[in-house]
Length: 313
Ligand code: UDP
Image 1 (cartoon, rainbow, N blue to C red):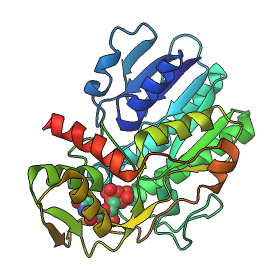
Image 2 (cartoon, protein in one colour):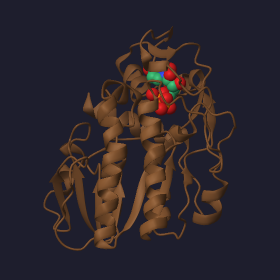
Image 3 (tube, helix red, strand yellow):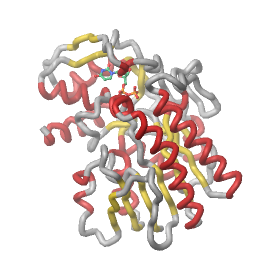
Image 4 (tube, rainbow, N blue to C red):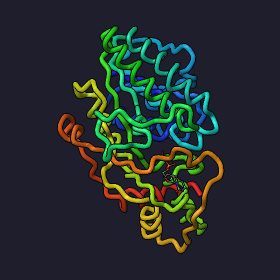
């Protein structure tokens, strides 16, 4: 297959490039390099089945030749990034989805949207299954990300229903691993970086909020299975092993053997505004329709992530 991956120089996008090239497909990575980096795909230079196009998908997207699949991963998924770039976040979710759906329609390509657990907002149902409609503050600082992805899902379903585009929607929960940007502000790079440097781990508020962390290879496996499945409606892809952020801080200290202490801080900026109190995927649907569930234990995934960050440092 000939596959376009937007956000192909980003964290998840670049791992998807690797995986699909390994399966002998042709891959075109498209990225405006706002948060993605060529370092993530530098090892693919010289692979004749790989191409990179620097382009911002909020503008008209042109790709020469046939395409069998379009995977729309371009996004600003880190809260720090989308708080700093709210308009770009809305544009890539809305205009970028529109442009890439139009491309998929023209080429007769299958389309996969990387959506998010943030569509559930600060959830009133726990764990979150795909039929929960969510609890999102549309005008809050996080709303720019959440609403852009909610709009994107609506647009995908509209193109499916009105134009017959063959679509897939992955609701991606917190994912971590090598190639995350160390300065992207999310809890995994923050804590692992702090632990490696011997700096205090910055637990926001009391660390009682919960998350569950999916290792990148598991995430990619789930996305690829979804792409090649027949499931049109959204599927949660995440790890259901839930823990508080304080517990997570202790796990990072154990795995890295760090002597860092834990510090509790109360951010006064928008970082924790509308921060979901709990988050955990119900993955019954992914188990049933994709035969997928995560396999990489947190310790193992954190070790590989720490090795990557150590090398970067
Ligand atoms: N968090 C934290 N310290 C940090 C960074 C994040 O306590 O240095 C918390 C944050 O408030 C949230 C959780 O960790 O409750 C996960 O945050 P992240 O930015 O990784 O992603 P989110 O799941 O909120 O999209």
